[in-house]
Amino acid sequence: MQLVLKIGTATIFLNGLEAFIQACPPKKAIVVCNEKEKRAHGKIMLWPWRVFLQELWSGKII
Image (cartoon, rainbow, N blue to C red):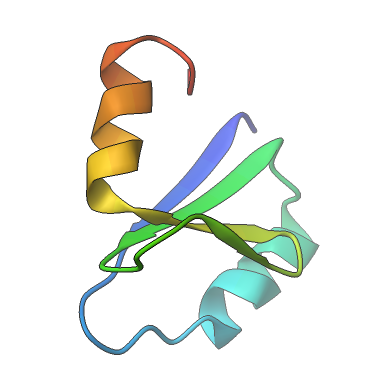
């Protein structure tokens, strides 16, 4: 699997995503949310939505 993507809002619950990643490990796991800066939570990357869109449109994600 190439990518697991979750769109978050104010409150982000990662337990289900972490369980999914353990069962089917992807190359990338990204949560798009209202964070101010990129940061990691274990194997999951939390990205500000603007950064995600810039990298998606420039072809850097997939």
